[in-house]
Image 1: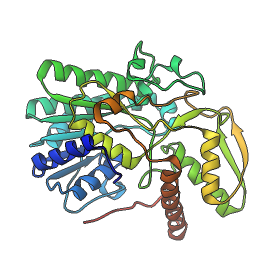
Image 2: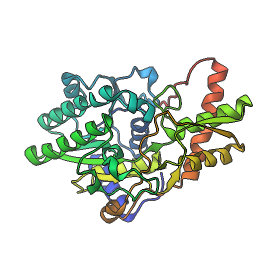
Image 3: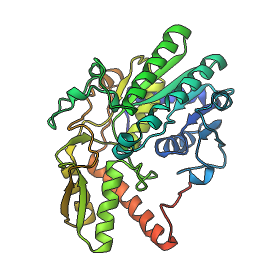
Image 4: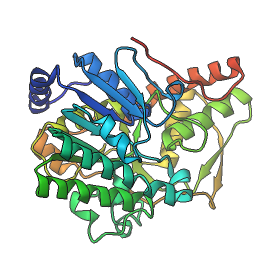
Length: 356
């Protein structure tokens, strides 16, 4: 885990001192961020952990034998109550989502995730949960503020007037408001972070739900290993993004939960890069240069998106700071190893467990 500010370190040390034996529930724990979060909570010394995900256990990216692992569909109300029984702190990372290709072609499925947060909030309020974290997304931001690749970093107020990503973004924005009103009406302590493009190892890199860093890494590796030195890029490649490495996400998520930040807040890197620039970075890591073919009909999302970190720096004296180059080198190595193993095993993306 990276070094943190004194304020963040104090928050996390106090949390551990007060909550080492509290029951902590991570919803969406079979996924990328959730698996890393469970792993990090274990590393810190938390002992009463419950991991919940809709996927069968053999499809979880990380799973630990000393954790209460449960396969539950949290879109069902009764399962939300079962998941949060005796819980003190809850991290809701559960959602039906993926990269831009999935989001643009599955708007209804993305919006149905509203049932997950709704039922978990109801259960949290009725069961006496102490703190509740909701993972929102930069997709809540007004699309008219993201038309230029030279985007002005998005500050929290830019979510209104509302014009979020159709489907997924509307669900996230509505669920943010649900958290606010449960705090205001019922006194449930809710905290909301707007994630900006989280990436790293132990995540999806093929199959249609992968995000840009993993998808492009896979394509570069495929080109290198096949000898066909070409790559397809969605859009012109000039669209811009910032990408946050998973370790920064873990620090920020836990610090926000234990902070006094009541409004939704950005959690993302402000290191802006074009998609072409990201491809060039991966090519450098791989030691190869590829011919680029641009698919202008493919989903590409907004033209520009970056995180304004003014507020999180003010509140926490900290912001995500792991360089894209450093994070992508770690991500590349992991995906490369998985693809070699995949070919050796003769099947699709292998499930990777970290067992106790």
